[in-house]
Length: 252
Image (cartoon, rainbow, N blue to C red; front, side):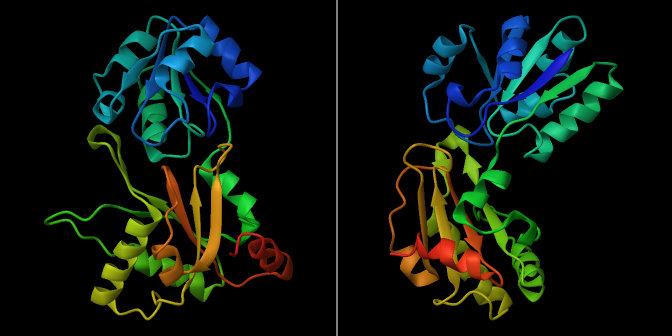
C-alpha cells in the first residue's frame, strides 16, 4: 500500500483527519522535500505527528528502484507531499509506476497553490494554462512559457506562474527574479506582452499566517521585497468587476 498524502500549504494543522489516520497506520512515513516548502521545521512536523520522517530527494521519488515502491510492495508506506499530491507531475508518475508494480495507491487530497491562488480574488475558472518559470543556466534558457502566457491573454484568461525551487541548493525563486526572467525572455521573443506597466499579482507564503499579496505593475513589483519563499506570480487577464474590486484590496 502506498499513501500519497497532501499536507496543505502551511504545517501539520492543515492535515486532514483522514491523513492523520493514514500516517499513524503506516509502517514508514516519507516527506518529499523538493517541490515546495513547509512553514515549520521538519522536526516540528515529526513532533506534531508523533512519527519520524525520512526526507526524500527528487531522485528517490522518481527512481524506478527507489525505496517507496520497494517497501510499499510488502507494507504500508506514506509519502507526504506539500500541497496536494497531484499538484506536481512527479507524483502522477509515481502513481502510474506504483500501479504497474501491483501496489495499491490511496490518495488524501489537500489545498495547493492551484486552488489557494483564488484568495487573490481572481476566479479559478478564469485561469488558463499554468506555466513554470525555471532558473536560467548556461545552455538552458527556455522562453516557451511566453507563448502560453500569450495564448491565455488572447483568451482573456489569467496565468499562474509557478517559480522554480531548487531545494537541494537552497534556491527559491522570488517574485523579483521571476519578473526578471520574464523580461529577459521578452527581449528575445519580442511578444510585446512583458512591459513595465504589465499588471502583475505577486504572492508569497500562500496559506501561511503571514501570507503576502500585492497587485501592481511589473516595474512596481520588481522593487518590492516579498520576504521569505515560497513565491508565485499571476498575470491577470480580463477582469470581472468583482475581481477588480478584490484586487483593489491588494493594491498599495
